Image 1 (cartoon, helix red, strand yellow):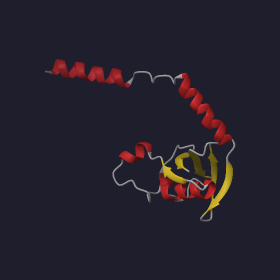
Image 2 (cartoon, one colour):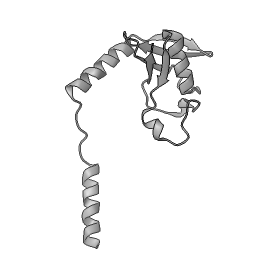
Image 3 (cartoon, helix red, strand yellow):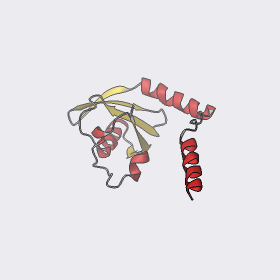
Image 4 (cartoon, helix red, strand yellow):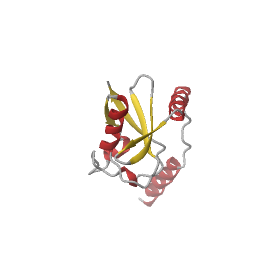
Length: 124
C-alpha cells in the first residue's frame, strides 16, 4: 500500500511541475489585439471615481479598471460604466470568480489583485 501511495505522490509532484503550455498563434494574436485596444483607453468618471476605459471597434467587449486600485467597486459598477460609455448593455465576465460561492453583482472587486483590467461583454 505504501508503494502505491509513493507512486501516486510522485505522479502528483511530476504533474504539478509540468511546464505550462505555450500560447498558440491565435491566442498571441488575440492578446495583441486586446493590448492594442487597452493602449487606446480613455479616462472616465463614475460615482466620483476615475476609471480607465477601452472598447473594441465592434462594441462587443469593454475593458475597465479603476485608476485607484484601493477603492471599492462592483461588477454592477463596471456594467454601468460600459453602458454609460457605449450605450450598450454590459455583462461582467466573472471568469474564475463565478466559481466562488457568494460572488455576485455587488461583490467588492477592489480586493482582487493582479488584474490589468476587467472584461465586460457588450450587447448593443
